[in-house]
Length: 188
Image (cartoon, rainbow, N blue to C red):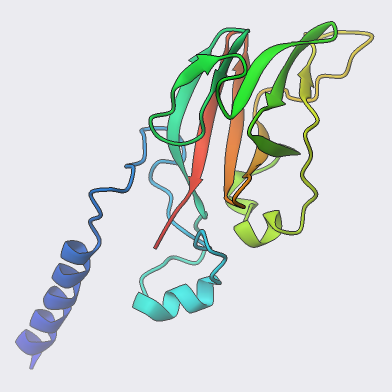
């Protein structure tokens, strides 16, 4: 009887491992969120419904994973999806360049919502659907500036929404040069 239970458990684990590999899906990087799993799927499915599919999803996990870390100079842009190209300033989804007296992240093909400094694991795709998104640049001022607020200090999370309604997160790691983590929704 014990052998039968062990074999059933082993068979279940084996089936899960062999059926979970998707060679077209981008693999997570080695960043801080690389090993994290899902709380919600990209299409807004609740965790309880997802857990009903296979019963293996941990309760306290995140809906996001680091897809790419990029570093770029001012006057450049970047794309949120593979191949994550660094482009001319207005050739990508987001640009990084001058805005008034300082630099700013500027939406080109996406809209923004500045979530400020929050834990990525607390953000769900369902929550993002309730937020207003706009085309307003998010300015960065040097530390100690008396005349300008730094709206994107290190660890700021910016939610990005594409024209077709997909959500991505950008985490600001540093600003000179700009270094960001791009988070993609984790799919079940």
